Image 1 (cartoon, rainbow, N blue to C red):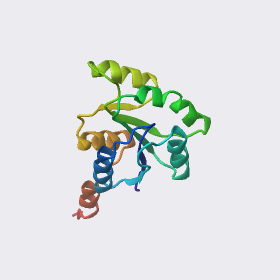
Image 2: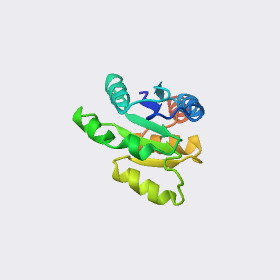
Image 3: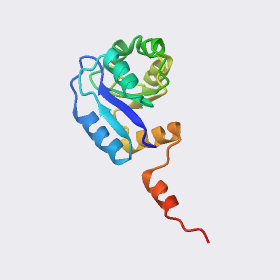
Image 4: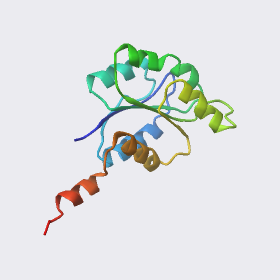
Length: 149
């Protein structure tokens, strides 16, 4: 069964290249991707996740103000009783020196996984597959075509 993920850039951020690459990689990996584009509000993420019965919400932010943009995000998710994984990635803090501190902040805000801007899309996809217990499409194909003796 295809898993649906919501993807977008939160707040006033207009950086589109990263989510375009991620959208293509996720689609190629067999996910049904709903790309909300740039300058996406918390409400738009929550509404899209609810409307598409998504399994995950992937938030991107590259302009360094993600902490402000994400305040209250998980409370909104809980208000509408959504059961979704939440990931965030990018350049999440201005002058970010120690990413582990940044990761801890966003985990405290409720995100299941936090990635820096150097993360390879394949690493994020592997984490998503593991968290959703989804096998890569080629493994599913191989299993269907295995002949039992």
